Length: 180
Image 1: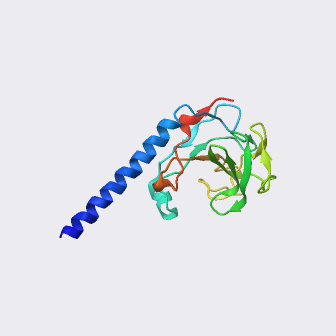
Image 2: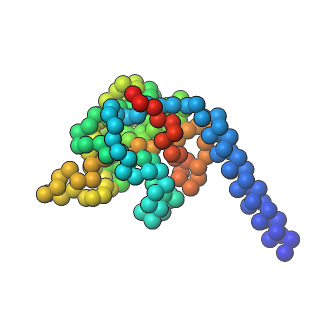
Image 3: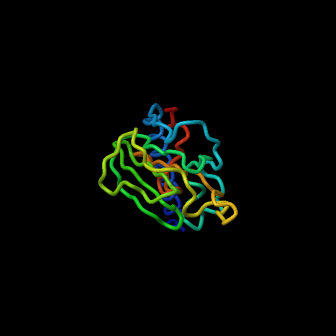
């Protein structure tokens, strides 16, 4: 009985420590800003944390970024300078690029074409990464009669020192974005 109580106390301590790490990281980063990954004003079609049922099978508590209704072919820019750490295609991400920055990482998904940048390439915050598309897992699914259905940009970030285990350390980028 004492062992069960000690295990529960340890679990509570670990949970409290994780919350403190998250809050501490957010306080440190409160003035941190990155550029929107496009020019213009596009509607948000899915916010961070929404649609938990879709993302739980993938290991997330909900949507792990922000989806913007960028029209097909919209130029997508790096939100800050950095180095490409992942680039390619997956059935979920479609054509995607992930950039390592001095502050963390940014992820851009569903480009219409294969990424032109390769792992190790350096990019500036003015670099065009690609163009908005509808590759990978998108809703609605494109069809022959509606080839542009599901077009959007999925944008995610991770900040160094900020833990968010229910989202594989992705955090809501909304509060960190500033207009180009």
